[in-house]
Image 1 (cartoon, rainbow, N blue to C red):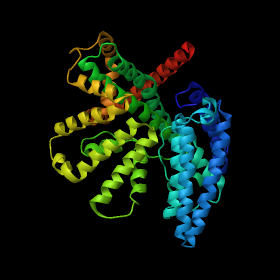
Image 2: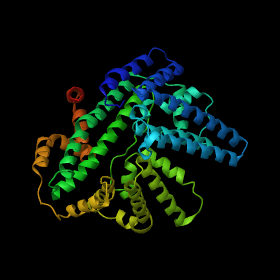
Image 3: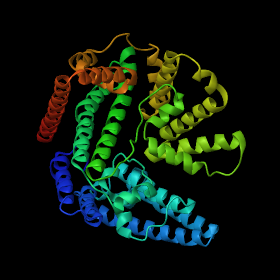
Image 4: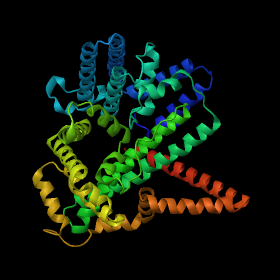
Length: 461
């Protein structure tokens, strides 16, 4: 099950939120959240629940062991258990997130597997909990139901964020939900749903028309790859928005798992803007590598980037892209970063655009030969200097959605528009009412369009 399933947001989600109001105790709310999360994870895949519970029990016991030895200042024993935790969570990631690596009897039937992205976040949460117990950032949890709430909450399954257990533990033990929380959560959910259902599929069609067309064109190569990244960006940020919305509706305040794209942080800022909490945890974990000076810094950066790439997908292309990203971050840190940071906004923008397309474009192609052909097409070699008819049609007939997507991504333009709206709303009570009514109508329209679109897709399938 995913967040944009009609069955989820018209059935399971309302039931989860409504039932949680029947009792004020955190224990009851946690029970409802656990039960609904089990349904979410195991929908049509009952075997996966058994694996999840076994993994949680192992993580619970390992956390208690690490805490026990840490209190007695037995660092070697704690380190051994932390390594065992890494192996357990890596096994969950490999078996359910990267099962394509196996063949024959070891390859899971899809009906038994957890969603790969859910398994990936589950594994990081499990290891981050043990890591924080080891480093003393949180206590080992003695109540397994509290840990279970943290580990399998459906809010955190598809787009994180990687919330540390010590940060979320107070809310697990005691929390309240107000009408404002429900309202804010619904607003954020509709925003995410619109991105996932209306915007991301449009860029998927543009990607196909630009990169998979029989006649590749110059502009099609640029637009197609830009659409590939836009599709990934809006799919991920949509899920992140919805995850934060579900948390808000259940009494949790999660950080956003992405930040707005800016040129200030150069390529490092661009990398951290996507899956922000995951990158932050990787940086912290790999900072434990022993040593001093620039050599240690380079090793940490490279290991962090390769490990993050392997978290997404294990293949030669992803690992090569991870290494390329690590090399760029090293060069920014030790060679040209300071000078480039002083250049004008548009220079940094061009630098980020070209690097992002060329480097991350490597994950799209199955072979280096295809990647090389695409690189050549970017400068007009071997193709026509015009858009294909299909691409023209898609752009012309969806110009308003594309403009909306551009406003969402372009921070200065978005800030300018919202400042103007806020100024008008503050001018009078009537203007404020008009803005509120307009926002409500727009959100309702987006929600209805999403429901109709999903219903038509389901009927067509």
